[in-house]
Image (cartoon, rainbow, N blue to C red; front, top):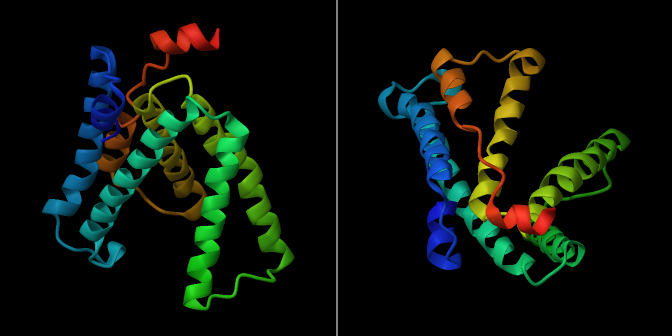
Length: 193
């Protein structure tokens, strides 16, 4: 989705090697979804695995729009003003939804405050801000291929930490999803060295 959007809206087309990496990633994602499409509903997924897959597609479209917009805006706006606007808009959205639903956000127990602080300092500042930094230097489809590694890493931690078992097909297809994305592009070499 991001590669197609990059070509149409930004005039940035992936190289042949990058296109192969994208194709392998799509193949891996297809293998993951295939079991949900062809299999019988299971109690493990509450019978709604396909609904989860459809929600993942909606999420992919949403992140594609986010990355494509970020790629365009980051050409004109420095990192900190950009993330201030993005993260501020996210905060206002969450507060608006919570208020509309009547959800009480605070006060929270100290343990939860520490957890959320850790999530803000770790994944948010290092991960998401890193992706937003990269959008100035590399095409959005390269950033999206790298971002695919995050849920794979989280899933790899789940079996030991949460005691969940993964099907062999899922493990194999997850290995195919990252597909060694080529990070060095001509524009990255020119602008980051």
